[in-house]
Image (cartoon, rainbow, N blue to C red; front, side, top):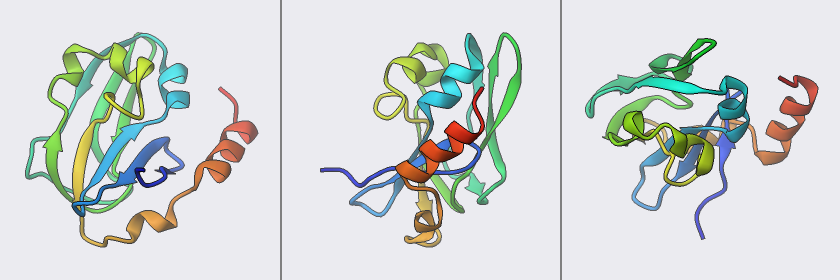
Length: 128
């Protein structure tokens, strides 16, 4: 069984992996709020990211949104097929729709993020 997801208030999710890396994506809620996705800019492997700072962009027909790193660390993998298959973000946001894998500076940094219940409460308090 994989580790439970944690969420940033900016709607990115993170899942710690057994190898010490962390998989990052955006929530189904965020994908639905953005609607028709048309473009995604991803970082290169080796890029250093800082928690709360932008590491890429996602564009829909109505807006361009930054993608924010939920933790600080180094990008060790990028889902390079995603920009050509943006529909994957809607159909499988927590699986095939992953965006990057980060090797966090602090293996426990994700623990400060929202758990599923807290994220659901955030969404309920701030609907689309």
